[in-house]
Amino acid sequence: AGAGLNDLHAVEVLCAEGPQRIRDLIALGVDFDKENGELARGHEAAHSHRRVIHAGGDATGLEIELALVKSVKRVAVEVHEHTFMKDLVVEEGRVVGVDLLLADGSSHRVDADFVILASGGAGQLYQHTTNPTVTTGDGVAAALRAGAAISDVEFYQFHPTSLAVEGNPLISEAVRGEGATLLDSAGRRFMFDVHPDGELAPRDVVARGIASQMAAQGGLPVMLDATALGSAFLEERFPGISKVTAEHGFDWGVEPIPVTPAAHYWMGGVRTDDDGRTSLEGLLAVGEVSCTGVHGANRLASNSLLESLVFAWRAAAALDEPWVALEVDYLADPASDVLDGETTVVDRATLQKLMWDNAGLYRSAAELQQAASLLAAWTSAGDTVEAREDGNLLDLARIVVHAALAREESRGAHYRVDFPETSPAFEKHLSWVRKVVARVD
Image (cartoon, rainbow, N blue to C red; front, side):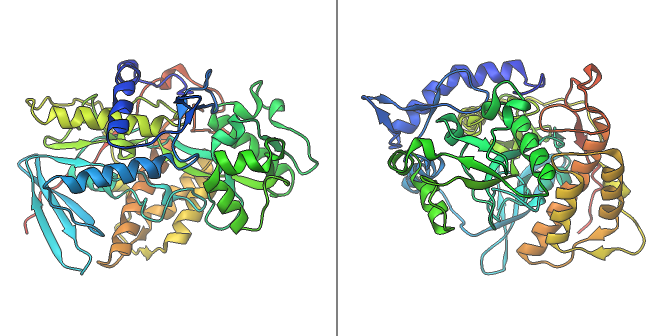
């Protein structure tokens, strides 16, 4: 699934240490679903076995989050909720804290021996996304401004199946793993025309297959048919999805539902080693904000939660060890390409549509260059949380577009119609660093 870019050692770490991290979650109170007294296992795309455990049917992430929040509240730490990170504090090349914007609008600085970013991805870059509104890439953008290396930002995974309604609720890949099929407007299964694994081909293949079929049928969504599984099974195995589909007027146990691809997961992020350390001393990153290299060019389904668990544990352990510098071969961040002349304050919806149209599932030099020109002339304004989020999205949109231009091949989640083949010359990570100019406050 990773299309040749998975870092072998990171994969070995994930596989070797994953089981113990699952046991840790169970000890913290996560009640994973059982079947005949054993952990129940689901089947998802590109997996060769039923190996994906779950909790609450389709509420695995929520169940884990609730258990971890409860654990945090049991220990003596300072917690700031509804708080926005404006920037990292860097002194003499080392991260020593964070500047925050609190819920009441006041600023607050937290000094720290180390800072660990766990701030998620940037799904709000795109017009259609399964991500919540807070996923504006704030951690990656702050790290970039501070001078940390970021990698693989051209690889954005589009989930094949979101419900084709406003908000694009996720329809889990596990539904297809249980036997649901994809149908075109004529009621025909079309994915076997695209890949021998049909609906269970890697995510990038299925997403592009759906997008192509939608284009062929005038933009109409394709249909996900789970009726053969029956209403009772769907309600028990996927209670969350059953609730969402019902809220939108669908009875998916008796009728197919309309689905469309949507931005879902960012393989790119702040480059780290296997212990979460970044190229900037004092800064670590875990989860989707990071780029460990474990996912390569296209994340294997359900490995994001596992990656967060495994590498977050290692990052915490690394705080007691001497700092080991992460050395990265990098290119210059295109921030210098921003126009010095007249600029336009851009609204988020316009930015998201540009990224969806010009840097989405299908990309070309002409569309990417057009996007780069527009992005260079756009700016954000204001000191509100929303304005700062827009600024972060604009920063990240520029570098995603430039990275997509630089990778003149198709690999994993990155598809160039003008370079449709995979090239051995690009069997490498592309990393970017912004030159930081010292500020005098």
